[in-house]
Amino acid sequence: MTYTGYTETGRKATVKYMKDKLKQLNIRFKKEEYEQLIKPLTERAGMKPTTYIKLALKEKLQRDFPGEVPDNAITDTEKDE
Picture 1 (cartoon, rainbow, N blue to C red):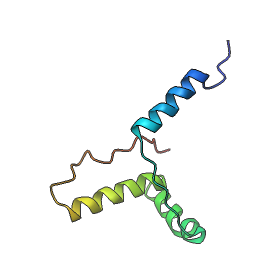
Picture 2: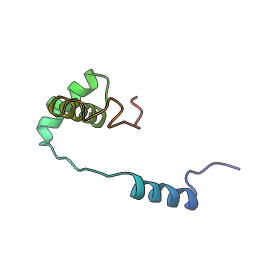
Picture 3: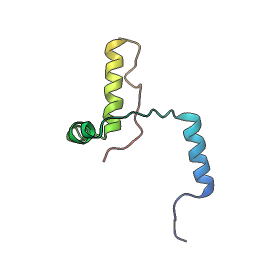
């Protein structure tokens, strides 16, 4: 038997998990800013842009609210390549 991807049951479970456990935030950048600044520099740092943004957000929150944001906050489940 050949694996062909998600089963319908698996797809439904993934959708339910995402709906129940995750909150998606949309963020927009000017295309030129993203392509010329954000993408190349985050790649140079060895991270995907989303991972870098999450880390930057956590660091800023920790600076602005000392003692309120634990080190294990804002975890990233994406695996960098």
